[in-house]
Length: 159
Image (cartoon, rainbow, N blue to C red; front, side, top):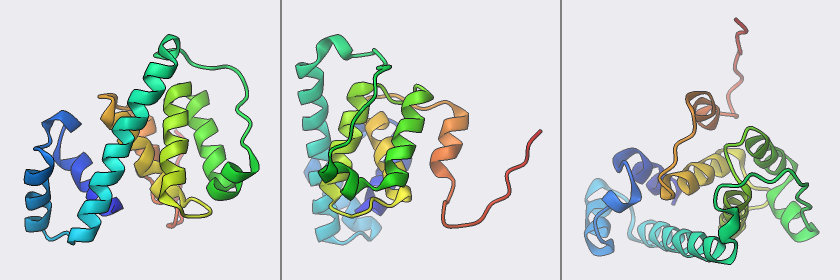
C-alpha cells in the first residue's frame, strides 16, 4: 500500500489531479501494482479525505492555528504509535509543519495502518500524504527530513 501512496505523491502534484477511482485503478494496475494493494491504498486515501473533512468541520476555528498545548497520548495510541513516532510527530508540531488538526489526522491515519509500533518510514509517508491532500508542502529542510532513510546510518555534516 505504501508503495502506491508514494507513487501517487510523486506522480500527481495535487490529489485533485488524480483521475477518478476507476481510471486510477486501471493506471496503477498497468504500472504493476497488485489489485488488493490498489484497493487498500485507495480506501486509505478515501478515509484520509473523510478524516480531513470531519476534523475541519468539527474544529473550523483551528484551520491554521498552531497549538502550544501538550497533546497527551492515551495508552491505546502510545502503544500502537510507539515512542519514536510520537517524538517525530511532536518534532513536526514544534517545527510548525503540522498544526493541531493535521496532527490528529496523522494520528488517525497511522492508527488505521494497524502496525505496532508505527515504523518511522511509514509515518513519514503518512505525514507527506496528509500535507499533500491539503495542498501543502513542507519547506526544503523538513522535506529532506521526511525522506531520510532511518534504517541506513548517515553522516550529518554541520556547516
